[in-house]
Length: 276
Length: 305
Image 1 (cartoon, each protein chain N blue to C red):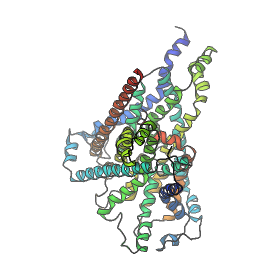
Image 2: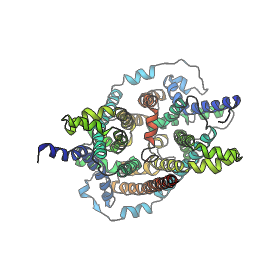
Image 3: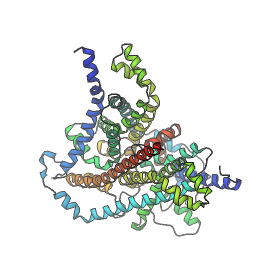
Image 4: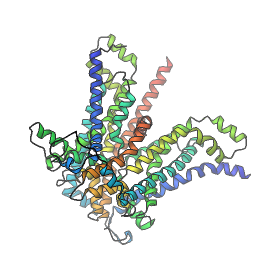
């Protein structure tokens, strides 16, 4: 084993702390700005000392339209996550246990899905949803796209969890007279809870953060928060304090998820590539 | 046949059906629709049934459109610059910081935060930091007595500014991946090199980098795919401007469809972008297959001894 001297160690951790500060800096700046009054923001001299205020948050949260958009985001995020998980784990189970397709087919389709730029989907999704499915300007239309986008990945990640469930467990249940649905819902699902949690975090985050499809599929009533923010920004006199407060509100759920499940998230980001 | 056996036989299909139906109607169908639509002269406001077939007209128009040429160059420049710089910085940092790290999970969590928050929010924060009057960069420059830089308002600076934001957001991805790759290198080869008197640099160039190569190639290709997908951050920071200096293809697709209302042309543009990304993706898939086959062969050979 190599020896590390004490000065080396100090320098080493100093570099790591600097990198962390760089990583966190813009996010902290957003937080600080959201706590500042207009006069402090427009002050030409940068100050770290200012009277923190919750005024931006209170005015943002008292705006009924923003509350509505936050509600829309939450509804779309939760329902699409739930649907994706239910359909995804059923499909993953069928693929693993009944030897449908191969692992290759699933990881290739996950990879292909990952590759599609969201902008490419805007034209067909807008046209089909509006003119054929009658789902334009409808939250359920948005849910439908998000479920479809997330399914390949969820199937891919749940597969590896289901493969680890001992088949004997299922056979025992079957001998006791359980039908395939009972085996799945009462025996398999409880065992793969960690996988479900990882998949849920991933799906919810994508639905919560997504912007461009939400922009073309929603109207004044069905907007999600990211769309609202972007429209707020194009106005001439930008109220940065309020914008940053809204930005924080959007950023909080993903930040919490990151602290809860950083390991699973890293696995997810390399989906379909590093371990095929 | 007994009812239970029918149910057993139907089960796999019943389990696959919901996911399959959704993916056919909400994924495969739109992609097919896109290809068909790209051959039609179709404007927003007219139903697709009234669109006029125009063969490769949209593609021909795109190829002759100077705006597309510029956007294409911007996209390629953005993607390659971002990937090269992020690889250099990320791998460099990983090589420098490779050793047992106390509290690595905390650092790792902090490093992935920029990738987790909504791209819209990332664009917002960077637009604020680049603000000419009260943005932190120009404030600092002024305080140190330098000229302020017109970050997002000058066509020469806008693309570099956007690239800097992307480097901030995504270098940690490369860093974390290459650190993990470094830490899982076979200790024996490094030990052997050290005993043979290889210097730090020689170890890095002749042993560490070649052994990390499989992971590095995949990481670079993944980043490349994502770089072609970027839209929101640039949408918020510059909306493609000034001029077309940051108008990446994703943004041009959106504008062609929902600002100029040329759905047929937007569909053709989408197909061009899709084709570029598809080539990279397939390259990656083939590469991982070859790599896995090679590993399997090496293992089989090792077992013979």
